[in-house]
Length: 109
Image 1: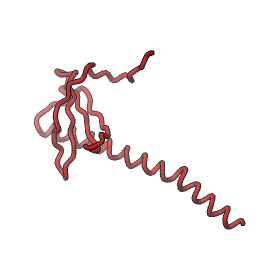
Image 2: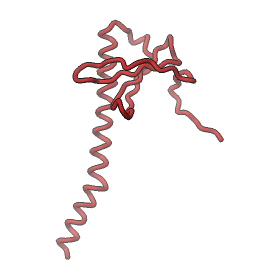
Image 3: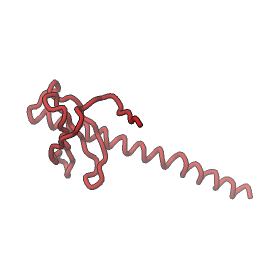
Image 4: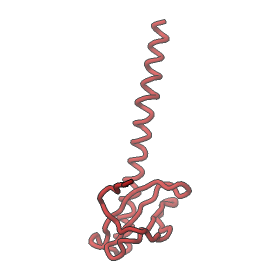
């Protein structure tokens, strides 16, 4: 009985704490990695830090981990960059209804 409780506690620890923390760590690493690689790619292509308003890592179904880039001269357009192999490529601009705002969006009823 004691042995069963010991294994139950170990499994509970694995499923409740260790696995979710590992998944969260992996996703955080991938988002940070795509952001940094995209910034490096844009700087290599000749863009300046001052031109970029924001670079945000996101996950999109069908594309995977992407970086959304907003430029100061086009705050209504976000450019998605994806990683294919070792290369960061632009998957296209997307027009948004609202200009980029670093504040969280508030939904009102």
